[in-house]
Amino acid sequence: MTEPNVLALENQVCFALTVAARTTVALYKPILEPLGLTHPQYLVMLALWEQHPRTLRSLAEVLRLEPATLSPLLKRLEATGHIRRERSATDERALQVTLTEHGRELRHIAETIPERVAGTLEMSPETLIALRDTLNEVIRATSATR
Amino acid sequence: MTEPNVLALENQVCFALTVAARTTVALYKPILEPLGLTHPQYLVMLALWEQHPRTLRSLAEVLRLEPATLSPLLKRLEATGHIRRERSATDERALQVTLTEHGRELRHIAETIPERVAGTLEMSPETLIALRDTLNEVIRATSATR
DNA sequence: TCATAATAGTTAGTGTACTAACTAAATGGA
DNA sequence: TCCATTTAGTTAGTACACTAACTATTATGA
Image (cartoon, protein in one colour):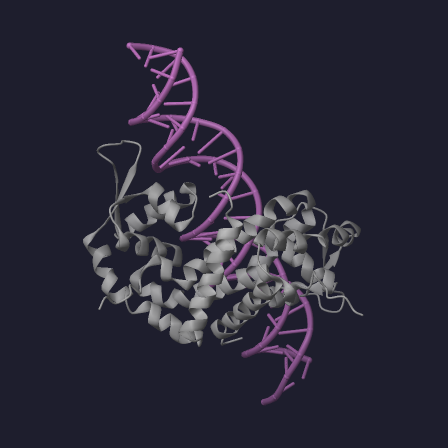
């Protein structure tokens, strides 16, 4: 009776998770490059296309990132002309993030991206939806304090 | 007939993937801290417990990391006394990575880790295995050139 | 054999992503 | 009202993770 090796790299869900995340993000790189965006920046744009203006805090919450991570990222997005960063008039502490004209227009091009990515994944829509749901289950279980 | 928003953050598999990877890795942090390891360093240790000594290149391949990423990481693992870095006698280009006595001994403690992590995931073994298999499918599809 | 190509690591530069420590502004009792 | 507390961002420091450019060593083929 040979017991399974619990420490085998191949058996680690977390290893599969980090590698899958990296290889999938890498898939976006050539697609996002023409838009002048990195993948984390693209996620910020998705959040802003859904609702803008919104504060750094609001973005940090939906993206599940620390404000300290987002702060310099937003500065880079401003430098590339995608967004504007300005203090809220009603609350001087809050940083209002607004899409520029350029940032708004990118949405039309971006709309073709999910299909292109899904294409190279070679997986049925059902499998992808199931994967997404399981991942959200993982996120829920691993973020008990939120 | 309302068409689904393909750009909705909630619908992005890649977003769920990166967040799940980050929150799951975060789960390991307090567990690995007593061992003086980060999660990427832990993965290197897993690879070395399976087989050592082995070269930087060999590690980069199984971990699916660039040699440039692993190079400084291994230096940190050497500084904390987990491994030894030395040039191969037969090929002066190759970097042989060997576990130290301390690095070998950590394996016993590490053997309890997978169970503890799986516990907080609150998911059945079957679901976890299915998740791992789907992730490996994603990895395969997104790494066509390997 | 000897120049050329291939291979193995390293370094520099950029961009996340985190924690801890900080500043500034708003809030909320006493 | 005014001081303590909370809230919103920023900065500094550490650690990945990538590409591009580099050095050093080994392999190869005319």
